[in-house]
Image (tube, rainbow, N blue to C red):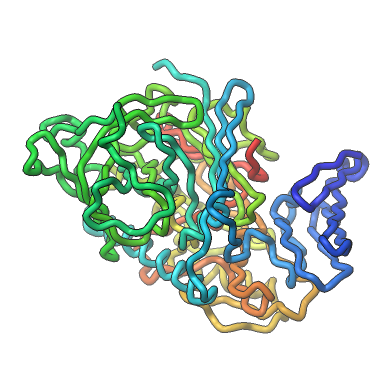
Length: 515
């Protein structure tokens, strides 16, 4: 019998139990209450012997070909909880090495920053509205446009809810100063707020000051980097009053923007150094960036971090997104060394769908979905590409697909009282009186045979922590020809690998943890 301790939770796995896909979990809470979870090949059951709420991330307990998950409805997974409050000085990101790879810890944003919102319900609604604005911005953008490698490097990735967004953050070192930035596969230009700043939003960390960085250099207006600004931002690089400076502007559909000039400096990812890294030095920034110091662009244009580090990492990166739990950390990995992954299922790959007009985005072809093992029938599958995006929270489906998915889910998740819809989520339940519920498993299938099982933590969005308003964490798009998006909420506890050289994306189940 082997024990694995995660904070207050101790998991005991018996050899015989593992042989038949079963695990017993005993949890000790602060009041010595006991909780028992039994995981079998077809279900996950969590029973309580006390009425107290338990912050338990059940997604880590998903095994085998399960079609349903049983969870305690009144003890939502900690990944579902809106946020946890921690003082800024507790925001420490671990570093380590394994098999020669550099590993950086990855957490949800609320691990690092104290919430400044007093009304939880309003704050959550603001987060989902902001997510909807991002999706509309992506749709608008699409409509308007109609060697030698070093060892793999890993950095910790964390939840960023207390930065007033459900996106994820990492800490990197730029010009000798640590900067916490949002991870975004739907953007290209990496940027941070800079001094002197004409119009900047609040952030806990000091603004980046290029004047005190000995390695900082401005990017000339006639340089190739400046000429690449348009493909990365949609706006041409412009010469300012200083002929040596290349000005940039990144604008979003909701009016958010960052404006400044390009610079280059020494970037450190874990223990890997990148010289002359080109980034945006934002002097005028407003919008849905929360309290982060900036944004890391992981798109495919020439100015993205992936393209700039292609010689070092071969255009390959991956992540495992953790829950919002303070004890949960994931990893952002640069490089193709799969030995540093901790996946529990084999990696399955699907090819990226080429789109010359939108080459910066990652498009995939979804061929089908199952709910509780039952196939969802809709003729729209396989006809148009879906975006996979770490910066969008809730997965968006074309109306016909969403209607079919919703109908099958309600057929299987029946008998529970309904609750009012919440923001963009229209399929909600009141589970506050239930000790145990049976949640159908959701699987997404891609061209080439790849599949992604949505972790139990990514099926329901807990609007209220007492489970009186729990919503299916999927939403429908307004128009049938709108582009579907796979959001980060459904990517939790999954290793997602982006290989830009082979033009493929891989998926594998993984309990996200750092080191």
